[in-house]
Length: 199
Image (cartoon, rainbow, N blue to C red; front, side):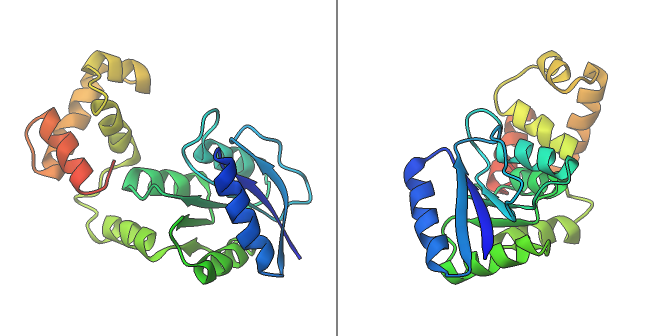
């Protein structure tokens, strides 16, 4: 019997997921939490976590568990932007599934992620494939971070402080971002990134 911990800040979502997972027969939910700061019991085989939560995010949780040699993590979320997908995979997530996935797909993803095999929904696999197929246009993780800061209206100085880099480095990143997105200003960069589901 596969032992699962569910982490999601919505109690109703957790209850629904628990019901679905417990119905499979070869899976049992043994623990729950509402954010990524939770302690994970030592007997858990897999953590199924959302990304955006108050407190620590699913990305933070994944990094922590990966660094500690803890159980694998399957991200189950509604967020399918390149920024979220890349951050989750780079943090060490074994799987990334969207919440509208069919039950059979969820079952398969849980079993595969628990065996430490990659389990990606088709949409997420497409996001990563797009990044690989067009490497010249693919934004780096740092460039995506900068874009996320840009969309909040932060100035170059504020972005530099947030990312612990110089303002000159911010300007260099902006030049690269504009070139990759085919734009010539901050507003157009943010709009293009949103249209392409990068942020």
